Length: 193
Image (cartoon, rainbow, N blue to C red):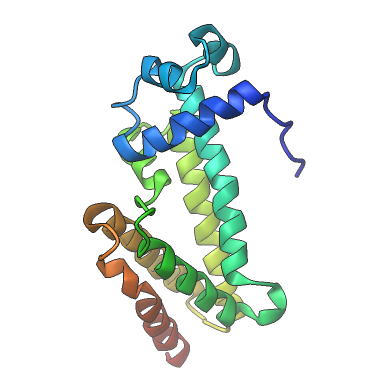
């Protein structure tokens, strides 16, 4: 897989401004005029880089996807740690993230909620992120020796999305701060089965 070509500085600036606005207020609530005003970039330039607001949203979600995987890999550590330790690392990292005041939940869940139509760019990017995470869990769980890898991977997905949802709903003092212990319990139960 080849890396995407770097975006021009003005396109990066638009994403830098639009992303936090989308994430905090929702995609529908943030108009192009506000993004243009806050970024200092002309509307014509915005539309030259992103022909529609949907394209801008998809570009931001694609950027967030790359950031998510970089962060997740950092949490999991190298493959030499083994799949079980990588899963623990992921959930320890998630626990810290959802307990931080900066965490507003999951941008992919927000996108799927605001763009439920499967054909939209935002929905496609959101589903691709969640599908890749589910597959990553499945691979790690299988590597850890769990026979029902698909079932456990689905349970870990539910824990992950539940932790993100709790962060969005309750702020930093949310039940998601205990997702590491919950994941450990379901992993141990699956290994013992």
